[in-house]
Image 1 (cartoon, helix red, strand yellow):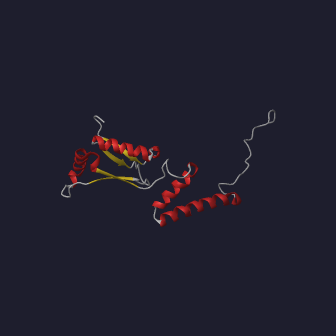
Image 2 (cartoon, one colour):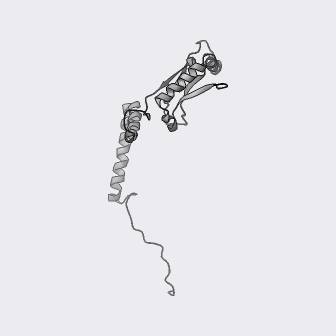
Image 3 (cartoon, rainbow, N blue to C red):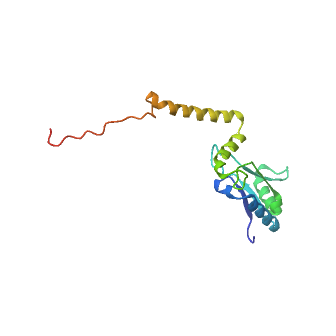
Length: 160
């Protein structure tokens, strides 16, 4: 761990979900043994992204807002892994108890479970509305209807 400043232990990117609990515990042990900080990052890139992790760092209450970033960095450098508490929201992991083929259902369930009921019902309403519109479109001749269009008309050779 020479020259290493920290480990990104939790990340919201799909690739990060491949980190099993056993490997996570190993990273925590190595970081703690070497006094290296561990942090969780959100990887939120815009509106609609949901943070799945928070890095909590205790700093003195008397720190001015302009000095807050410096105080956080100093606290992490001085305290290493003990200075940061990582909080994760529950998510589907590769070493969870259920079979891999249920993962898509689990991901949707976890997303809806974390949302307020009003937002979950709104998503369900939109899904059903779009499904109904798609199912009814062929009957009404709407955008989803199948139509046979004539091909381009080409002049018959020799006919003017």
